[in-house]
Amino acid sequence: MKQVASYHEAPVYEYTIENKVLKIHVLNFGGTISGIYFKEDHTNMVASFLNKQDYIDQGGPYLNALVGPVAGRIAYGKYEINGVTHQLSINNGVHHLHGGESGVSKKLFDIIQLNDTSLHLHLETSHEEDGYPFGTYIYDIDYILNDHDFTIKYHCTPPDVSLLNMTNHLYFNLGGMKEDITHHLLKLPSTKKCRIEKECHPSCIEPIIKGSAFDFSSLSEIEQNLIINDPEFENTKYYDTPFLLDEGHIILKDPHIAHRLDILTDQSSVVVYTANWFDENQIFESGMKGHALCSIALETQDIPNGINIEGCHPHQIYDPQHPYTQTTTYRFTKE
Image 1 (cartoon, rainbow, N blue to C red):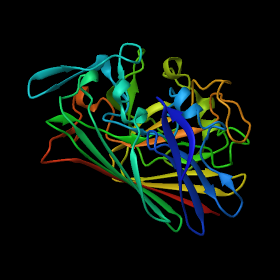
Image 2: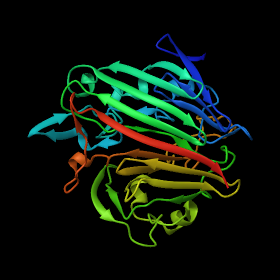
Image 3: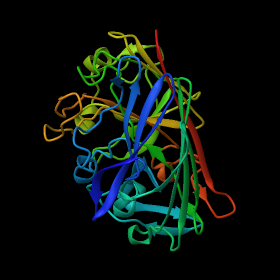
Image 4: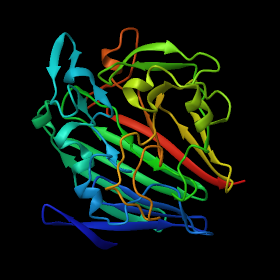
Protein backbone atom coordinates (compact mmCIF):
# COMPACT_ATOMS: atom_id res chain seq x y z
CA MET A 1 0.00 0.00 0.00
CA LYS A 2 1.03 3.63 -0.43
CA GLN A 3 -0.29 6.95 0.79
CA VAL A 4 -1.93 8.91 -2.05
CA ALA A 5 -4.06 11.58 -0.33
CA SER A 6 -5.33 12.77 3.04
CA TYR A 7 -8.73 13.18 4.66
CA HIS A 8 -9.22 15.28 7.78
CA GLU A 9 -5.44 15.03 8.29
CA ALA A 10 -5.61 11.20 8.21
CA PRO A 11 -3.68 9.37 5.47
CA VAL A 12 -5.53 7.83 2.54
CA TYR A 13 -3.86 4.68 1.29
CA GLU A 14 -4.09 2.85 -2.02
CA TYR A 15 -3.96 -0.95 -2.06
CA THR A 16 -3.43 -3.25 -5.05
CA ILE A 17 -4.74 -6.72 -5.85
CA GLU A 18 -3.78 -8.45 -9.09
CA ASN A 19 -3.50 -11.70 -10.99
CA LYS A 20 -2.39 -12.58 -14.52
CA VAL A 21 -5.40 -10.87 -16.10
CA LEU A 22 -6.40 -7.84 -13.99
CA LYS A 23 -4.96 -5.27 -11.62
CA ILE A 24 -7.22 -3.34 -9.24
CA HIS A 25 -6.39 -0.35 -7.03
CA VAL A 26 -8.49 0.36 -3.92
CA LEU A 27 -8.51 3.33 -1.53
CA ASN A 28 -9.37 3.00 2.14
CA PHE A 29 -11.43 6.20 1.69
CA GLY A 30 -14.94 4.96 0.91
CA GLY A 31 -13.63 1.60 -0.28
CA THR A 32 -13.14 3.48 -3.54
CA ILE A 33 -11.88 1.52 -6.55
CA SER A 34 -9.32 3.85 -8.13
CA GLY A 35 -8.57 1.64 -11.13
CA ILE A 36 -9.45 -1.66 -12.85
CA TYR A 37 -6.87 -2.51 -15.50
CA PHE A 38 -6.37 -5.18 -18.10
CA LYS A 39 -2.73 -5.99 -17.44
CA GLU A 40 -2.13 -6.97 -21.06
CA ASP A 41 -2.75 -3.49 -22.49
CA HIS A 42 -2.91 -1.38 -19.29
CA THR A 43 -6.45 -0.20 -20.13
CA ASN A 44 -8.25 1.26 -17.11
CA MET A 45 -11.91 0.34 -17.51
CA VAL A 46 -13.31 2.70 -14.88
CA ALA A 47 -13.28 6.50 -14.67
CA SER A 48 -10.40 7.36 -12.33
CA PHE A 49 -9.25 10.74 -11.15
CA LEU A 50 -5.76 11.79 -12.21
CA ASN A 51 -5.21 13.39 -8.80
CA LYS A 52 -6.15 10.95 -6.03
CA GLN A 53 -6.98 13.86 -3.69
CA ASP A 54 -9.94 14.58 -5.97
CA TYR A 55 -11.72 11.50 -4.62
CA ILE A 56 -11.96 13.39 -1.35
CA ASP A 57 -12.30 16.96 -2.64
CA GLN A 58 -14.84 16.13 -5.40
CA GLY A 59 -17.04 13.67 -3.58
CA GLY A 60 -20.24 14.56 -5.46
CA PRO A 61 -20.02 11.84 -8.13
CA TYR A 62 -19.28 9.16 -5.47
CA LEU A 63 -16.74 8.00 -8.04
CA ASN A 64 -16.29 4.21 -7.70
CA ALA A 65 -17.07 4.34 -3.96
CA LEU A 66 -19.09 2.07 -1.72
CA VAL A 67 -22.51 3.54 -0.95
CA GLY A 68 -24.49 2.98 2.23
CA PRO A 69 -26.33 2.56 4.44
CA VAL A 70 -28.81 3.33 1.64
CA ALA A 71 -28.09 3.84 -2.06
CA GLY A 72 -30.07 6.26 -4.17
CA ARG A 73 -32.70 8.81 -3.20
CA ILE A 74 -35.23 8.36 -0.42
CA ALA A 75 -38.06 10.67 -1.47
CA TYR A 76 -38.24 13.67 0.86
CA GLY A 77 -36.06 11.69 3.29
CA LYS A 78 -39.10 9.87 4.72
CA TYR A 79 -39.96 6.22 5.13
CA GLU A 80 -42.05 4.09 7.47
CA ILE A 81 -41.22 0.92 9.43
CA ASN A 82 -43.89 -0.81 11.52
CA GLY A 83 -46.12 2.23 11.45
CA VAL A 84 -43.38 4.61 12.61
CA THR A 85 -42.31 7.40 10.22
CA HIS A 86 -38.57 8.09 10.04
CA GLN A 87 -37.08 11.34 8.77
CA LEU A 88 -33.61 11.26 7.23
CA SER A 89 -31.39 14.22 6.44
CA ILE A 90 -32.00 16.15 3.22
CA ASN A 91 -28.80 16.45 1.16
CA ASN A 92 -29.96 16.36 -2.47
CA GLY A 93 -32.61 18.91 -3.36
CA VAL A 94 -35.60 17.78 -1.30
CA HIS A 95 -34.36 14.20 -0.92
CA HIS A 96 -31.95 12.04 1.05
CA LEU A 97 -29.17 10.63 -1.17
CA HIS A 98 -26.60 7.85 -0.68
CA GLY A 99 -26.68 7.80 3.14
CA GLY A 100 -26.16 11.51 3.71
CA GLU A 101 -23.08 13.14 5.21
CA SER A 102 -22.36 10.10 7.38
CA GLY A 103 -22.55 7.69 4.43
CA VAL A 104 -19.80 5.10 4.06
CA SER A 105 -18.54 6.81 0.88
CA LYS A 106 -17.00 9.43 3.19
CA LYS A 107 -15.49 7.05 5.75
CA LEU A 108 -12.01 5.56 6.13
CA PHE A 109 -12.16 1.76 6.15
CA ASP A 110 -9.69 -0.52 7.87
CA ILE A 111 -8.29 -2.73 5.12
CA ILE A 112 -6.55 -6.06 5.53
CA GLN A 113 -4.72 -7.43 2.49
CA LEU A 114 -5.45 -11.15 2.79
CA ASN A 115 -3.28 -12.12 -0.20
CA ASP A 116 -2.35 -10.89 -3.67
CA THR A 117 -5.93 -11.21 -4.90
CA SER A 118 -8.22 -10.22 -2.01
CA LEU A 119 -8.88 -7.41 0.44
CA HIS A 120 -11.13 -7.30 3.50
CA LEU A 121 -12.63 -3.91 4.35
CA HIS A 122 -13.99 -3.24 7.83
CA LEU A 123 -15.83 -0.23 9.20
CA GLU A 124 -17.67 0.45 12.45
CA THR A 125 -19.55 3.71 12.35
CA SER A 126 -22.78 5.49 13.25
CA HIS A 127 -25.38 7.22 11.09
CA GLU A 128 -27.68 8.87 13.63
CA GLU A 129 -26.66 12.35 12.43
CA ASP A 130 -28.53 11.49 9.22
CA GLY A 131 -31.58 10.10 11.00
CA TYR A 132 -30.76 6.38 11.07
CA PRO A 133 -31.12 4.32 14.27
CA PHE A 134 -28.72 5.06 17.11
CA GLY A 135 -25.74 2.73 17.54
CA THR A 136 -22.91 1.13 15.61
CA TYR A 137 -23.25 -0.21 12.08
CA ILE A 138 -20.65 -2.89 11.32
CA TYR A 139 -19.58 -3.20 7.68
CA ASP A 140 -17.49 -6.06 6.32
CA ILE A 141 -16.79 -5.95 2.59
CA ASP A 142 -14.64 -8.36 0.59
CA TYR A 143 -12.97 -7.51 -2.72
CA ILE A 144 -11.94 -10.75 -4.43
CA LEU A 145 -10.13 -11.21 -7.73
CA ASN A 146 -10.30 -14.60 -9.46
CA ASP A 147 -9.15 -14.96 -13.07
CA HIS A 148 -11.40 -12.55 -15.07
CA ASP A 149 -13.81 -12.03 -12.17
CA PHE A 150 -13.84 -9.24 -9.60
CA THR A 151 -16.37 -9.96 -6.83
CA ILE A 152 -17.69 -7.65 -4.14
CA LYS A 153 -19.32 -9.30 -1.11
CA TYR A 154 -21.22 -6.96 1.18
CA HIS A 155 -22.17 -7.59 4.81
CA CYS A 156 -23.63 -5.04 7.23
CA THR A 157 -25.00 -5.62 10.72
CA PRO A 158 -27.11 -2.70 11.93
CA PRO A 159 -27.57 -1.85 15.63
CA ASP A 160 -31.36 -2.03 15.38
CA VAL A 161 -34.12 -2.47 12.81
CA SER A 162 -32.84 -0.42 9.92
CA LEU A 163 -33.26 0.43 6.26
CA LEU A 164 -30.23 -0.89 4.31
CA ASN A 165 -29.59 -1.01 0.56
CA MET A 166 -25.97 -0.77 -0.60
CA THR A 167 -24.11 -0.55 -3.89
CA ASN A 168 -20.77 0.37 -5.41
CA HIS A 169 -20.88 3.47 -7.60
CA LEU A 170 -18.47 2.14 -10.25
CA TYR A 171 -18.32 4.26 -13.40
CA PHE A 172 -17.32 2.22 -16.45
CA ASN A 173 -15.72 3.22 -19.71
CA LEU A 174 -14.33 0.01 -21.19
CA GLY A 175 -12.23 1.90 -23.73
CA GLY A 176 -10.08 3.61 -21.14
CA MET A 177 -11.77 7.05 -21.23
CA LYS A 178 -10.47 7.85 -24.73
CA GLU A 179 -14.03 8.40 -26.01
CA ASP A 180 -17.38 8.69 -24.30
CA ILE A 181 -19.69 5.69 -23.79
CA THR A 182 -22.33 6.47 -26.43
CA HIS A 183 -20.99 3.70 -28.70
CA HIS A 184 -20.99 1.13 -25.89
CA LEU A 185 -23.53 -1.68 -26.19
CA LEU A 186 -25.76 -2.44 -23.19
CA LYS A 187 -28.05 -5.37 -22.43
CA LEU A 188 -30.40 -5.37 -19.43
CA PRO A 189 -32.69 -8.35 -18.68
CA SER A 190 -35.46 -5.98 -17.70
CA THR A 191 -39.10 -5.45 -18.68
CA LYS A 192 -39.93 -2.92 -15.93
CA LYS A 193 -38.41 0.28 -14.60
CA CYS A 194 -39.13 2.95 -12.01
CA ARG A 195 -40.60 6.20 -13.24
CA ILE A 196 -38.48 9.23 -12.34
CA GLU A 197 -40.48 12.23 -11.22
CA LYS A 198 -39.77 15.93 -11.82
CA GLU A 199 -37.94 16.14 -8.48
CA CYS A 200 -35.78 13.21 -9.66
CA HIS A 201 -36.89 10.51 -7.23
CA PRO A 202 -38.05 7.02 -8.32
CA SER A 203 -41.78 6.52 -7.99
CA CYS A 204 -44.10 3.87 -9.43
CA ILE A 205 -43.02 0.80 -11.37
CA GLU A 206 -43.99 0.81 -15.03
CA PRO A 207 -43.45 -1.52 -18.00
CA ILE A 208 -40.69 -0.82 -20.50
CA ILE A 209 -42.20 -0.27 -23.93
CA LYS A 210 -40.58 -2.34 -26.67
CA GLY A 211 -38.48 -0.11 -28.92
CA SER A 212 -38.41 2.76 -26.41
CA ALA A 213 -35.32 4.56 -25.15
CA PHE A 214 -35.35 2.23 -22.13
CA ASP A 215 -35.48 -1.03 -24.09
CA PHE A 216 -32.13 -2.78 -23.66
CA SER A 217 -33.58 -6.30 -23.88
CA SER A 218 -31.00 -7.05 -26.58
CA LEU A 219 -27.54 -5.54 -26.98
CA SER A 220 -28.25 -1.94 -27.97
CA GLU A 221 -25.98 0.99 -28.68
CA ILE A 222 -26.54 3.60 -25.99
CA GLU A 223 -26.48 6.46 -28.50
CA GLN A 224 -29.18 4.86 -30.64
CA ASN A 225 -31.46 4.52 -27.63
CA LEU A 226 -30.77 8.09 -26.57
CA ILE A 227 -31.77 9.32 -30.03
CA ILE A 228 -35.24 7.82 -29.48
CA ASN A 229 -35.52 10.24 -26.55
CA ASP A 230 -38.13 10.15 -23.80
CA PRO A 231 -40.00 12.87 -21.85
CA GLU A 232 -38.33 11.56 -18.69
CA PHE A 233 -35.00 12.92 -19.93
CA GLU A 234 -36.39 16.41 -19.32
CA ASN A 235 -35.96 15.59 -15.62
CA THR A 236 -32.81 13.46 -15.71
CA LYS A 237 -30.98 14.76 -18.83
CA TYR A 238 -29.97 11.21 -19.83
CA TYR A 239 -30.21 7.91 -17.94
CA ASP A 240 -30.63 8.03 -14.18
CA THR A 241 -32.95 5.09 -14.14
CA PRO A 242 -33.68 2.06 -11.92
CA PHE A 243 -34.29 -1.04 -14.04
CA LEU A 244 -35.90 -4.06 -12.36
CA LEU A 245 -33.95 -7.19 -13.20
CA ASP A 246 -35.71 -10.31 -14.44
CA GLU A 247 -32.38 -12.07 -13.96
CA GLY A 248 -29.07 -10.94 -12.54
CA HIS A 249 -26.95 -10.77 -15.71
CA ILE A 250 -26.05 -7.42 -17.27
CA ILE A 251 -23.77 -7.00 -20.31
CA LEU A 252 -21.77 -3.94 -21.35
CA LYS A 253 -19.47 -3.98 -24.41
CA ASP A 254 -17.12 -1.59 -26.15
CA PRO A 255 -17.14 -2.87 -29.76
CA HIS A 256 -14.29 -0.55 -30.78
CA ILE A 257 -11.73 -2.50 -28.76
CA ALA A 258 -13.72 -5.69 -28.06
CA HIS A 259 -13.81 -5.28 -24.28
CA ARG A 260 -16.78 -6.87 -22.51
CA LEU A 261 -18.16 -6.63 -18.98
CA ASP A 262 -20.65 -9.14 -17.58
CA ILE A 263 -22.21 -8.20 -14.24
CA LEU A 264 -23.66 -11.10 -12.24
CA THR A 265 -25.68 -10.05 -9.20
CA ASP A 266 -28.17 -11.31 -6.64
CA GLN A 267 -29.87 -7.90 -6.50
CA SER A 268 -33.33 -7.03 -7.81
CA SER A 269 -32.41 -3.90 -9.76
CA VAL A 270 -29.67 -1.85 -11.36
CA VAL A 271 -29.55 1.93 -11.56
CA VAL A 272 -28.09 3.11 -14.86
CA TYR A 273 -26.53 6.57 -14.61
CA THR A 274 -24.66 8.17 -17.50
CA ALA A 275 -22.60 10.78 -15.64
CA ASN A 276 -25.23 13.34 -16.57
CA TRP A 277 -23.89 16.20 -14.44
CA PHE A 278 -20.13 15.65 -14.62
CA ASP A 279 -18.15 18.80 -15.44
CA GLU A 280 -14.74 19.89 -16.72
CA ASN A 281 -13.35 20.36 -13.21
CA GLN A 282 -13.09 16.57 -13.08
CA ILE A 283 -9.88 15.44 -14.76
CA PHE A 284 -9.34 11.74 -15.31
CA GLU A 285 -6.26 9.55 -15.76
CA SER A 286 -6.59 9.59 -19.54
CA GLY A 287 -6.63 13.40 -19.58
CA MET A 288 -10.34 13.49 -20.40
CA LYS A 289 -12.35 16.14 -18.58
CA GLY A 290 -15.68 15.30 -17.05
CA HIS A 291 -18.81 15.65 -19.17
CA ALA A 292 -22.15 13.92 -19.56
CA LEU A 293 -21.83 10.43 -21.09
CA CYS A 294 -18.10 10.16 -20.37
CA SER A 295 -18.82 6.99 -18.36
CA ILE A 296 -21.71 4.84 -17.19
CA ALA A 297 -22.54 3.67 -13.67
CA LEU A 298 -24.32 0.33 -13.27
CA GLU A 299 -25.34 0.28 -9.61
CA THR A 300 -26.65 -3.10 -8.47
CA GLN A 301 -29.00 -2.78 -5.50
CA ASP A 302 -32.53 -3.40 -4.30
CA ILE A 303 -35.12 -1.06 -5.82
CA PRO A 304 -34.14 2.49 -4.77
CA ASN A 305 -36.83 4.24 -2.72
CA GLY A 306 -38.69 0.93 -2.94
CA ILE A 307 -39.86 1.28 0.63
CA ASN A 308 -41.98 4.22 -0.53
CA ILE A 309 -43.26 2.72 -3.79
CA GLU A 310 -46.76 1.22 -3.74
CA GLY A 311 -46.83 -2.42 -4.78
CA CYS A 312 -43.07 -2.74 -4.42
CA HIS A 313 -41.78 -5.46 -2.12
CA PRO A 314 -38.12 -4.73 -1.46
CA HIS A 315 -36.12 -6.65 1.11
CA GLN A 316 -34.59 -3.57 2.67
CA ILE A 317 -35.33 -3.90 6.40
CA TYR A 318 -32.62 -5.63 8.43
CA ASP A 319 -31.73 -6.07 12.10
CA PRO A 320 -28.83 -7.47 14.18
CA GLN A 321 -30.14 -11.03 13.75
CA HIS A 322 -30.74 -10.57 10.03
CA PRO A 323 -27.79 -8.63 8.57
CA TYR A 324 -27.62 -7.19 5.08
CA THR A 325 -25.75 -9.12 2.36
CA GLN A 326 -25.10 -8.73 -1.35
CA THR A 327 -22.81 -10.42 -3.87
CA THR A 328 -22.00 -8.91 -7.25
CA THR A 329 -19.33 -10.10 -9.70
CA TYR A 330 -17.80 -8.06 -12.53
CA ARG A 331 -16.35 -10.26 -15.29
CA PHE A 332 -13.95 -8.51 -17.69
CA THR A 333 -13.10 -10.28 -20.94
CA LYS A 334 -11.90 -9.57 -24.47
CA GLU A 335 -13.77 -10.83 -27.53
